[in-house]
Amino acid sequence: MLSVGNPVSYNHGSSTGNPPYPTDDPALGTTIMAVVYDGGVVMGADSRTSAGSYIANRAADKITLVHDSIFVCRSGSAADTQALTDYLKLYLGMHSLDLEEAPSVQTAAHLINQLLYSNKNHLMAGMIVAGWDKRNGPSVFNIPLGGGVIPELYSIGGSGSSYIYGYVDANFKKNMTKEEAQTFVKNAVSLAIARDGSSGGLIRTVTISADGVERELVLGDKLPKIGFGQ
Amino acid sequence: TGYDLFATTFSPDGRVFQVEYATKAVENSGTAIGLRVKDGVVLGVEKLILSKMLVEGSNRRIHTIDKHAGLVFAGLSADARQLVNRSRDEASNYRTTYGSDVPAQVLANRVASFTHAHTLYWSLRPFGASVLMGVYDADGPQLYCVEPSGSCYNYFGCAVGKGKQAAKVEIEKLDLANMTARQAVVEVAKIIYSVHDEVKDKAFELELSWVCDESNRRHQLVPKDLLQEAEKQAKEALQEDMDDE
Image 1 (spheres, rainbow over the protein chains, first blue to last red):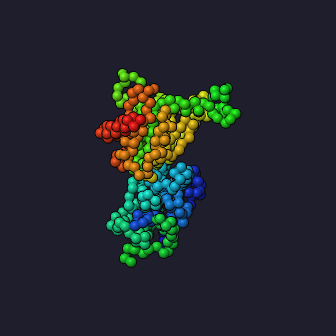
Image 2: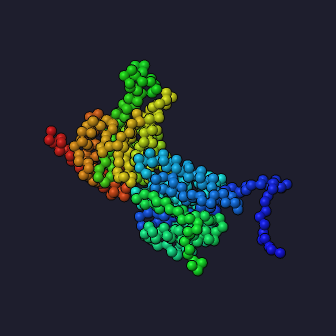
Image 3: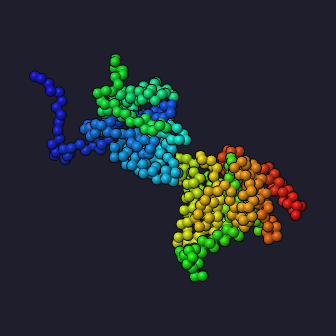
């Protein structure tokens, strides 16, 4: 007798009252990271948005623009993080009119922290704010779940990040070249995707420097094959 | 006449008299001067002493708004107190929200908006004070003047109060771009001594502050020894002028 393994069970709207569609809030079970290199930052993320075990979006873009050279990696509730980055984009736009120049990454990080901390009881959002500004050059700021602004040279976040702490701590070097940093990010995210069920899909990277913004895509079947005896 | 009762009425020739009257209150007060130089901003004021019973150093005219910003005012001191408190709040809120020092332009515009708002309603009166703000931000030292009308300009050198006309003449003679804050302190003292009217107002106290490289970009009253040196040189310069005459 062939075993079919565990059959998928469909919920046909049972008497328990559960509706026949996924009811978990779409979340960014995620791997996100940002790394400072010599002259800029490289931000990377996976592309999986899950609603429970259903993948609502397998090619999501979790690295969101909030100003010309400032981006935010989003992890946590998709709705919460989108609302926050929408507000941040608005406030940064208005603020740059007052300043008559682009705001600094530090400003963006503190602004979003104000929003997050004041509403911490209603939000689930962990973010990494990174970018380049004229006065400070490249910067990365980690904003964890409850608030707080932590400036770092490299930062990882999301559920998949737990599996790559050792890898990034061992392999990060200060003042890497752009290519070294991009490879570092792609390798790290790839390792996280391999172990974290809530991370997957493709790897998106955004490289920001004085020269502008470069977006890259590594498709799911072209993920770097590191480790696992390769 | 008749057009000067409320700040909400224009005169037929396009003036708001209440705002102009507020400016008159400023012009009756002791002269305040601000100089923006190469490495900082110096603020100084002629504090007319109304009574011998006043404790020396009381009735401060120069106030610190934030560690990198200070202001001096001319006009009604109680009105100016509102502006000082508002400036402090704005600077503090900016720091909390954006995580860094408030830029000079932003602070000045906020104070100017606040001042201007008080010229829009019949139920409020305009502030009877002009404020000179010296701010050392990431773009360097800057000096802004906010008047009762709410107008706000960026200056290299500015004077408000009784002797402002004479002071402005003196200021224009100076080469501010090549001066250091230490030199400017002496110049401000000299100008204040020279515009002080010995006949109409008797005693006065000189208050001087700076925010410059030498003070580590922090706004503070000028150190005592420099203040005394500046006053000495100012008195000597005055003596020379009198001797020349």
